[in-house]
Length: 120
Image 1 (tube, helix red, strand yellow):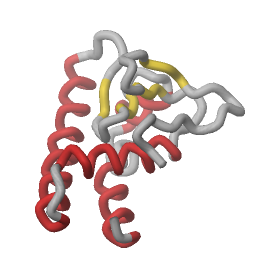
Image 2: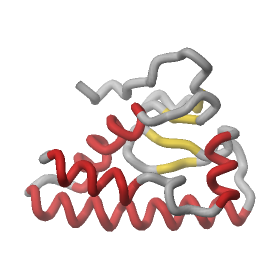
Image 3: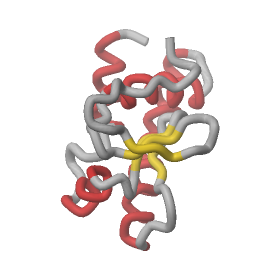
């Protein structure tokens, strides 16, 4: 994926940048996090408000993945997986993430950023 397209994708996919402070707090405390497939998820049972916010982000991401996939001639899932590789590098300590094994984890202080298996 070209660098400019990837930067645009990450700006649109980043959850905390233009979202509510409650979502930012949920991300910081591990109540919502990044999944290996380029979407957000919620470990445990989220509040209705958090569930709606995560669903809205995922809808925007899905639409963007479809748009970029169409331009690139690939499947939207490939764009999501590629985006996840970069989003995982941006995790901060305390934030939750989900790898393909289905286990939610939280990034600890001093830990390196996790890498989903499909990332190079």
